[in-house]
Each structure stands twice: as C-alpha cells, then as structure tokens.
Amino acid sequence: MPIHDLVVSPEVGFSPEVLEAYLKRTDQLKQGQYVDILRRSVDARQKNIKVNLRVEIKDTPPKVEYVEYFRKEYNVTNAKPVIIVGAGPAGLFAALKAIEGGLKPIVLERGKDVRARRRDLAAINKDHIVNPESNYCFGEGGAGTYSDGKLYTRSKKRGSIRRVFEILVAHGATTDILFEAHPHIGTNKLPKLVTALRETIEDAGGEVHFDTKVTDFFIDNGEIKGVKSEVGEHRGIAVVLATGHSARDIFRLCKAKRVKIEAKPFALGVRIEHQQQLIDQIQYKCNDRGEYLPASAYSLVSQTTLKGKERGVFSFCMCPGGFIVPAATSPGELVVNGMSPSRRDSKYANSGMVAAIELEDIPEYQKFDELAAMEFQADVEKRAWKMGGSTQVAPAQRMVDFVNGVLSPSLLETSYQPGLCSADMMEVLPYFVGKRLRQGFQHFGKKMKGYLTNEAQIVGVESRTSSPVRIPRAKDTCEHVEIKRLFPCAEGAGYAGGIVSAAMDGERCMDQVIKLYGSP
Image 1 (cartoon, rainbow, N blue to C red):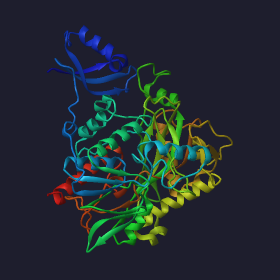
Image 2 (image 1 turned 90 degrees about the vertical axis):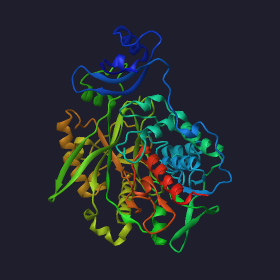
Image 3 (image 1 turned 90 degrees about the horizontal axis):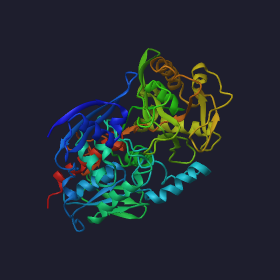
Image 4 (image 1 turned 180 degrees about the vertical axis):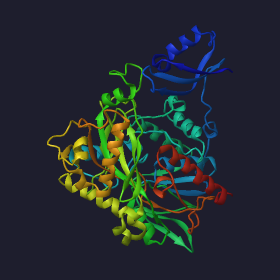
C-alpha cells in the first residue's frame, strides 16, 4: 500500500482527525481507507515548526502484529527451571523469552511489587526514610518503573526494538511508542504495564518472588548451580544476573566468591532544573508551544579540558515536563534522578548533567581494585547526604552562581519533594567534576541562548548513570568468562543502559541459555 512522507503543521501531525481530513483533502486517502503512522518527529530548526510524518494508507484497519507467544498458550510449570535475579526490564523480558523457549523462569526480586513500592517511595519523599530493599531503584519493574519510562535507544544491534515495543503495547502501552522518534510511556502508566508483564509470566507457569534478596551463589568446579536467598535455596539450569546498576551487595558478593568483575568508567554530576516554558521558548522559538506540540527536550554534549585531559560533559535522561526524585538505595546517601508522567505536564524540565570519569581520574581509589569506581561513587553520595543535613534534602545552587563560584542566597521553587538547601556544589562534587561542569555549562549557554541562567538550579548528586562495575562475559554466548551457566545481564553487568537496551539484553542472554542448556 502507498507510503507517504509528509511535512505538516503540529495540528495535523498530532491530531488523528485533522490528519485524516488533510489526507482526504489532498487526495491521498480515499473513502474506506485507513491511516497507519509509521514514524513521527518534530522539526524545530526553523521558526515555523513542522512535524515529519511517514504514513501508510491501508484498505484494512492497522493492527500491531504481536510476537508469536501472545498467540499461544504456554505451560512451563514442569519445565526445566532457570533462575533470574532481578525483576527489572532485563529480568522480565528474559523470563518471557524463557517461556517461549520452553523453560520455567523463576524470578527473584529483592524488592516489593509495584503497588507495595508506592508506600516506600512516599516514605522517602515525606519522611526521608530509605528502605534499602524497596525504593526508586529496587522492586518490581526495576528503576524504570517509577523513573519515567523513556524508551529511546541507540542499541539497535542488541536485538529487535520493534519486538520489545510490541510486547509493551500488548501489555498496555499506547501504540504511539511504535512510531514516535523519542517514545515514552510515563511513570504513571508503567506500574500497570509491569504488573501485566508479571501476570503473563505467572499465567504460563513461571514464578516471580518478591522480598527475595539473593545473598550467596552456589558455585562448584567453575559452574554455578543456583543461588541462596534470605528465604531459601533456588536451583536451576542457569542463573541470569539482572540486578541493575545499584546492587552494590551483588558486586561485593561477586568479589567475595571470586567471580571475575572489573572496575568500569562511568559518569557523575547533577540534575539541572529549568522552567519547562523557558526550554520551550529556546527550542521552539516561541512564547507558547500551543495545544499540539509536546513539551520540548534537549540533548547537549561538550568536550572539556582539565590538566590536559579531555572528558565529555553531557545531558543524561532529560525529562521534559517532569520531576526530580530521590533515588538513594541505602540510608546515609543522597542520589537524585528524574522522571516524567505520560502527559509531561509538569511546569519543570530537568536533566542529568554529568561528566565522564575514567579510572585514572580516581587514583586514590585504586586500593579497592575492582570496586574502585563503586566506592568512589558511594563516597560522593555520602558527602551529598551530609551536605543536605543528613536527610534526603538535596544540596542545590543556582546555575550562574555555580559557574561563578557564588553561594546562592536563595533557591528557586522545585519539583523535588524532600526539599533543597543552598550549598556550594563544588564542595559536594569531586573538584574535577565540578570544574568540568562549569566549562560545560558555559558552552551550553552559547549553544542554547538563555539556557545558562540563574533562573535554573543544579541539584546533587546524579550518580547512578550506569554501573561502575562490569561483570565480563563471552561476546558470543553472554556466559561469564570464567563461571559456566552464569549469564551477567544488562545494566548491572555493564552491558546496557535504559529500559529497551536492558530488555533486549535480557532476551539475548536467555536466547543463549536456551541454546546452550535448554535442550531436553
């Protein structure tokens, strides 16, 4: 059927009814035909903003061709068990792939289900109480469940992005994610979707266990036999380790059990918060984006030089129309992250703004060997907690004040519920990170006129950008380089970043489990 590439106004691009009328008026859509949007993106380079559309005209209503196992009834109740540690995107998608391959997934999650997690998140925001097993990072769905749900990824070689999106649509996501250039679900909709994924696993005979923290590995003659948790032993044909980038106890367990791990470069910095209206004015070049345009986003990167060494400073996990949230996983530390609801209708825009850190930048931490970057990260978070008054109140500073080395006498309103306190962020951040951020902000202020302003403030610290540890695995089989039947997976192993890449890596690891150990 005909495929058309269109350049239209925002009203046409974001209103199905207006789009249909436009196509009929231009003789591209006949009576009784249907429109299927294949791709949509906003072009804001010129003053008159346009929307790029790719549409297909069909004689039958468009439908999503769901993956094969949504058309089958699986029963793996008595099949070979495979242990999956972690119920984030990687763990859940690994479990779905196990079912498709005829294995019984047993998912062990240290945290609580999505509904029970809400109480613990409220306790962080209101009472500054951090439950180390249930928080913004740990629990059903992982860190992504209550931290936005952005689906954009560049990891196209890891697997089928379309397949991941179709699985999400089958479990409650809107079909918009199939064609948006930067798809997004929203933290208000993710809990129901994650629950639906779990129900699919359980309906097929798989198991998902909450409040089940793994405390030991059973390793014999270079082969993992299973794991021990706080509630018992769990044995299976393989173990997929999908614990996320914040499970420091698992990294320490790996080191104690002589499971090879490596220190890994990562990035650290702050969250920066502007009024969304200001970002819209800069990006859309207008005072009011109107009814149809979405809250605008940005992506910034700069190369900075300090003592002859170049390091990148870049925006990370930009949240238009969003909120800053407390993402600590243990008492005595302070971490911030960002999220957006599906409508992205908050008056604030926030983004991580971080500097790349190489292992040579932290020589004093080399005494920790494989855990050098992790211990450095932890110390920065402890310092931020102390600067915030030993609560979840976050240290903050107005943007220009930070660049100029001036303590802010007052702070702006914020979306961060626990509250802010004025601080010299150069005392919170590692010196070399703070110096690089200053350089980066000055560059970004030239690139986006109006971005560098004291009507924005930085909030610290944004430190969980990626895992500071890698658990090395064979490139072709995804199996650990030394321990047979152990499959380090996704963000926690240093092999993914974000919901979609983690989900694809979960599937990829389980594909290899099925291939190597899943035969009858």
